[in-house]
Image (tube, rainbow, N blue to C red):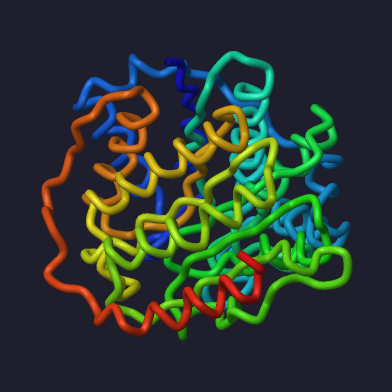
Length: 344
């Protein structure tokens, strides 16, 4: 089976010393893919930068102009306390979004069954109007809209299991019934959105599904939420394409969060996503890099995504099982409430 791989050396140019979202993140993945001999097994596609029109399909003119202004300066700007931009950052962000768009092209035009977009800066916190949470452009939102505009796909599913809620993706599609957004995320936690009763608005009511869980949950919780809520909701929605916002910051070793997913649990989720895509979207699936700040978990995790898309059964896991997991009883109420809200 063919698996497309999109990344670019430019992704190291957007960098700020000692910031959690630094160039070493993607370099660690590149190094591990090479060390494990996976790189040459993937169909490499060199991405092109996203155009103004592709950016404006999901972002306001003011959002783009803010990055254009920063590109004309000779200094690093902190847009908020977490989110930096350099003069080169707009060029890099355009290429990151373009890589995800080109990954969609690869699975939609038949060059590949699956695709991995290893990009930075990440995107899922960027709203229609605002850069935030380390994110400058919403890569996955632009790719979903591109799939609809260029290939006539009626419905796209975005499943986000970064540890943080993808508030930007939710914001962009909140009133849109043609894009379903499903998120499993730690709560209460940054950015403070993603309550279970946030289900969309207007024509998009019901097309947003949030599964907020407290810190301490791990493999068993994520598996139950996927099997009992994510999968049936996705089958009900019946998308033409599945896009995955994937952060490895729910791993138990991650320094910025407190979830208990293991690399084995992440591997289960990736393979479950691919099986779901086979069932509902003719196998068309794109995995998109978001967070993950323990470099070992991040690098081996993405190698395992590559293995899964290539049909390799084994995984790479230097950490092993998580040390523990929160009590399961609290999840029963969440599953019941989500199934009731979304008529599953």
